[in-house]
Length: 465
Image (cartoon, rainbow, N blue to C red; front, side, top):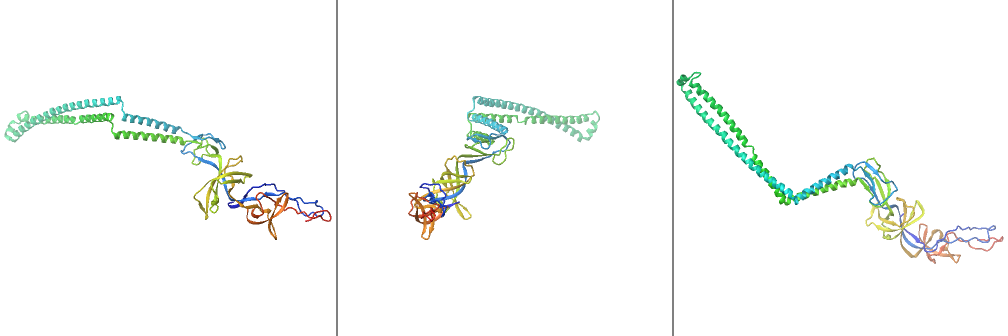
């Protein structure tokens, strides 16, 4: 139920109501009818806003594995109380731990490389210098070998030139005889001078072919590029030595970036390992366990945890009543499941923004309950009354105590053990209480059951009304 109501803060004595026994007993009644005991006192009216909500723990959390895998162990059960940081459940972490170990080694290696870049050891500098010296020797040897090959080319190609000159002479002798038909006829014959000229030409041609092949081989050997390769290796060795003794700023920055990359990779591996373990984020009670050893981790909450050190109730208050609600305001809560139990509390906060639902604007109000031994449970229905300021000039009485006749409304009050009629003017009636004005004082007891009036005795000794 929700809405501003006129209720009372009990100021006077609250007595138990005794059902009166009254009626006309003309002939069998005793000498008098007992007067009912006065019951609820006249109360001072107060502003009260009522609402309904549910019991909520101080904190609650749905815990789920953030990485896939198979559950290796579950260390808790529903109803267990755990401390912050306690391990609740865990996945199989063999592969995840291996990834962490590899990432740690990679980071150490990269850190060593960075240190070597920034401040190299004397041993590494000496090794780099030795590499430079060795490269210089290799360059010298390559150049000498190149010179020797050049000499071989000169020699080989000179023989080719000589063979070519001999061929030219043999060709000239042959051409002279071939053009002189008479002399050719005179010198012809299998073993004559002409045949020797022909054979000499063939031999000269063969000698040129051999000399040319030897020249080409020596030239090809000269073009191996050994000297250029040796020079390139020398430059690389010099650059490495120079980087050790005077590293470039960009090289240092690049090495530092690589260290940071390896560090981030290690953090990621460690985070993946942590995701395989569920720990309690705060002290509390386990309210649900879905995880099972040997089963897949699943996508939903594996474990639910609640902090029940304090409960609160969130209620929605209509915009027409929110003005009567303030932080620190006293709260009374009763529970459908726990008849007769009342818990006290305070208004902790009021939302600044409201929510619109079916044309009605409501504001969420959080009310914190005081510690209690009552067996409260999460999600129990709670009826909340937010007690506002009192109105000392307005009194309320139980509606059943108000009567009326031709002269108006009245109540019976207890006055020195006697019932006295007091005329009143009535106002708003809500929740079994009615506003009244008249000659009443806060704390006076009123009668719910009308007291019997004493009348003269009848002809047979009974009382009459």
